[in-house]
Structures are given as C-alpha cells and as structure tokens.
Length: 492
Image (cartoon, rainbow, N blue to C red; front, side, top):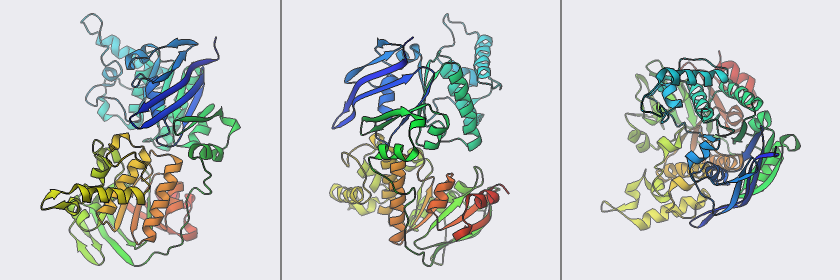
C-alpha cells in the first residue's frame, strides 16, 4: 500500500494577470487529518477546486493511491472518492434530509424506492453516531445538523478523501466539539480529511499534519507536533506578528451616540448605553443573546417598539437603513457576501454604492470621480486587487472586508457597527483589520464591535457590554475585562 493516498505534484494554475498556484506539491497520508492553511488569496481554495474538478490545472499531475488520475469535473472527483463540504452548505432547504443526501440519485430504473433511500440515509447518520428523523425538512435543522447532512451526503459517495472548508465558521463551541468527534470517527474508519481553517487552535486540536501556502506556493509541510502557532503564522504572512492585537494610545472623547430603553418584541429588553468618540465598544454574548438584533436596530434595519437613539444629543428616527446612513451610521454586516457586498460588481462600484451622489454630476455617474474615490480607499486601506475593476468575487475574504469598510468611510460614516468583523479571514488579514480599526478611532470615528471570539473582544475593546436574553447584563472596563467576567455575565 502506498504511503500517500493523495499526491498533487507541480500544480500550476493561472488566471488573467494572476498566478494562483505556482508549482505546488501537496501530499496527504491515508487516514490522516491534514490542515491546509494560508492567508486569504494564498491559493488554498484554488488547489482544492482543482482536486474537486471545478478547475483544471495548467500543468502538474494528481495521483490517487499511487495511480495518476485525470479529474475533469465534480462528478469525476466524487466517483473517485473525493468529496467537498463547502463553508456555505450545498443543501435545498425545502427538501428532507434523505432527499438532500441522495439528491439526483433517487433511482436507476425510473421507480423511486423511498423506503430504501430513507434507510440508507438513516444508516449513514447512524454511522456518524447520530439518529434523527430523515424525513425532517432541512430548512428546519440547526447549523450543526445541516453539517451532519453534508457529511452524510459526502459519505454516500463512498468518500475516501473529505475536504472540509472552514467547517466551524458558523458553529458554537459545543457544536464544533461535536464535529471534532465526528472527524475522529472518520479517521478511525480510514477516511482522510483535508481541513481548511483560519482557526489555528483547531489545527493543533485535531490535525496530524499541516501544509502552509503563501502567494500560491508551498512554504512548508510538517507534522503538527513539530511546529508552533507563531511559526505557522510567520510562514503564512511572511513576517512576524509581534502581538495578536495592536495597541493604540488614543483616549475616547465625548458621547456621540446614545441608546435609551430600546425594546423590540422579545429580542431587545430595555437596552441603554453610550458610545464615545474615538472608542471601540465591544458587544459580547452567546448566540441568541440579541447582539445582531441590537446592531440592526441601531442601523435602522429593524424598528424598535420603544425607546430611542440619539446622535450628538439629537433624537434619530431610524425607520430604514437609509435613515442610518443619512445619520452617519454604517454597518459592516455579519455576512459580507449576502448583505455587505455586490459580489458581481467591481471594487470601485462597491465602494461608491453607498454615496452615488458624490460621484455623479447632473444625475449621471461620473467615471472619473468614481475612479478617484476607489483609488483613494484602495490606497488608504491597502486593498490588494489587480485592478479597481476587479470583481469582488475574485478577492480574498480579508480584502472583501476592507471594501465593506471603504464603502462606509466613503459615505462619511462617523459610527461604524462591525458585526463579526474578522469572520472567515486569516490571521494576517485579521491583524490588518485590527490596525485599520485602531486607525479609524484615532481619527475620531467610533466603532461598535460585535464578536463571538472572546480574545478579539478583550483585545480590541475600550469597554465591553455583555448581553444575555436581549438585555445588557453588565459593563466591563479596565482591569475588569477578563474572559471569566464576560462568560459569567453571558450565561447568567
């Protein structure tokens, strides 16, 4: 039996103006959990899309169990035992669990044996240690249950190699631990997992080996016990990062925004707080505590039942997101792809979209003004793009996030609400976002930051409000800001 179940040798892939992969060699041993890490744009997704048959390499070869193979499409990959679980689930919410698992493979003869399909689906879930009704509609499942369905679907193709792309990005800590248990079972059954994640603690928790990509090249491949977190980060970004959270010396000023007794159905209950000029105010709490609902209310995306919001001492009428924008409030939403950007649009058009009147003359868009605005923010925010005309689809997650911030800066927002500002981006891009946040508050902007990552809240905030069940359970500042105090308030 050959040592490596998978070998990708000399893989090169180019796109117009970009070398995405440059002579990459990537090898995975049978039955191991192999981490693939790197900054956004390093080439991880491109390499896996070649393995999955979505892209074709310009040069190089792929060997499976020592035999050279050609993967012309996704169905080829599946027939060969290679399945991918993407960060965004590929499920149909209106169909049942069983229907999703065997979608497109209900029958070979024209007659559908639903009893057999349901049994096979139940058996697959049972093999993972779970038993729930396979007749349930997928749209009514939790995120963790949907991920189980995705894994069962992958196993239904007799997968020998499972690619997991950021599998814990939408999971709670307990759900993530459940997933790790499933990966351990897959490993015990001889299934190989390629694990893509920006969360390095997960790499050290479950992975046997790690390959680091940077700028389309393999920088290193080693057993996990032989490397440290700092070494991986340095190889990923090509430089040392002296600290996870950059420090700043500015001191917050006077109050710019106030919320008083905000109530919204049962989602918000008597929320009151102040935000100061040049401050990062952290909002912490468990999933379902009301953090995002508060952000939506402050931005005008949802109406309140009682209470009010003031900006510089003036009461605001927040009936829509336009009202939020018109009052110098911007919102970096939790899901940049769904609600923060128009992915088919260019960088320049995404930046100008919130302030078209500034790049228009006589009701017509002025390309020169739009170009000047884009150049300004591409430079100031260090947005890495081949061109301002590049589609957002082709930018890394970190650079997409910078474009979201840029559009609100161009709209002259004085208050930025940032909901999960570093979700799905790598450690190098995170550091750049943190530096950008510090720069903004030093220039007099104010930031409300919502994050599920406790170290991020503690490392970046001047003060922290902790929410539970739609209420603010406490405020922490200075020496009182600790993980223990946050969690004590969050679960009380």
